[in-house]
Length: 637
Image (cartoon, rainbow, N blue to C red; front, side, top):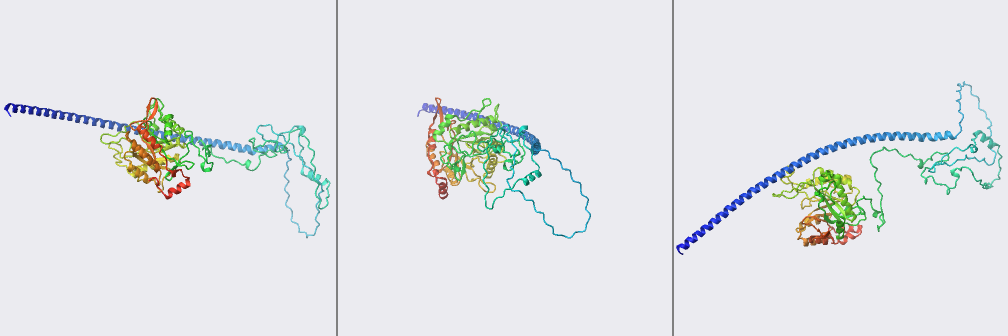
């Protein structure tokens, strides 16, 4: 190589080294800038987290003050109601005493007005004490023979004619007759006895029966006729006229018709509604077990549900399988004035019913239900929930109300360090939330309840991280029992869905303090469509004895085949399930095209899963079904 070539090679190497040095400097500068930006972003996140925590503490303090004020107002209201009840009881007692006095004095006044005045007997003067005389010897004295009563018919008593009252209601009362028809006064007893002695006595031979008396010719009465002389077919029954029957002298009869009604203390509370069994017209089994219980105004024709072993059955002992979707949006809804947007339309409900769905889930926010937002209060939020329940029930769909968020304003995404801003556990306000919903839907068979979402360990930014670093089964069971107690206190027949701890169901069935299982519960967990083997095994293990559900099947847009394979397996095992979305997010099942709803590829996969038939054993008669699954538990394995 010549000297010129070596010099050119050296210059070329120097230029390459210079370019490499410059690239390294640029890389270092970019790394420094990126580090500074990341530091600034971390500072901004810390500031936002601190601001969110401060706002959360302020809201908690405001909520605490509001609850204290509400408790004081309730105490004042209860005290005022107690005073009103006592005052009403006193007034009712005074009215009852006045009515009792009038009832006591009315017969006496009537008797005094209708009978002649009797001569008052003067008391006889007391005899002086007789002097002691010597006792005379007893002698036989002839007894005086009693006077023979002359034989003959007894004089017929004449009843005083009575007049029918002209008062409405058919009440029989004695009225004063005109002077021309005034009844004769009753003769004294001594005169009646003397007339009987002077009447001729008829002597009849022994063994001879008395001659039958002929009917006297009827005389058409021109005046008022006594009510007992009117034939039964011609007179109107006093009971039919709404008036208690009275005796001939105008006083109420003794017996059940005049039984005194026991007095009760009046209250200001609404009387309990009388429950009657309603037999629908389309019921093919008109037996007592098939009679329907009364329901509310929102549920339509949907029957009540109950959990019986591992089955969910209705009033006719038919097995029901809950399969449906989750209607997202109402947990973070922004009100327009004083109204919230409706999460479900009639077209969407009809499409779900045509697919084969039987239930929809409605996630709710605790702060919106208790406080509202802006001009809309909590009652406006619950009215939107009522509209969704009524729309779903009109299409034959049940509604599951889920406590999804404690605050509709805090974010729910995961931070850079894996922090989860979803609520890890419910708070004391959750008890008020379930108390309000239980009272509101206690008469609605179309409403079911999911107590909470899947719990998780608190993150570093959570306020409870220092007190409770990890959620365990005893802690989660205590929270569930507290919410169930508030729910069942107002709604004893409520069917509740209970999520497990993460992907485990080992802490179920949920027991009471005495060890007995809590009735009418459906246990479940979240089930990913792509990795469903472990979760499905947990559901099948518990589903041998208890009712279980997949509380949210999460699937991506490209996991339609996994959903199609999972649907028949869940149906054959008798496991309830819910899709995690409906019309929002990347997991949406439908989308709106040209003003109409059209299913996405993932939606068509879920449509096929909804059409999967239940096992044949679910269609057996109740007794045969119980016997079969008692002998062969877990037929869906």
